[in-house]
Length: 137
Image (cartoon, rainbow, N blue to C red):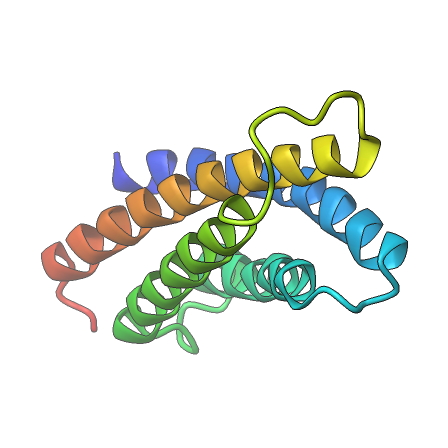
């Protein structure tokens, strides 16, 4: 059961990552990389892609290389990164954008950042429970 749930959650993270990557890449290019909050969220997207590949693909295809403790630690760090980045953007954008396109993109990036934080936190819990119940560490 844990394997099926984990695979579905990894797929959901992948879809949200594509959306977040597009939003933050747009913001970074729009502000020429001068806004560190957007740069950090772009880093989060790329970091999470690597972590999801490790916890999803390596765990299933190359199980001899996968270490459960490392997977849980990477997911926990990823959840912290998403929370920090989403808070950093949310603290600086207004509630009402009044038709300002970049502000609306930043609001969407913040929303998807919080979604990714919640999902990676849940995935961390799933992986931690799975690593405790398995005999292999």
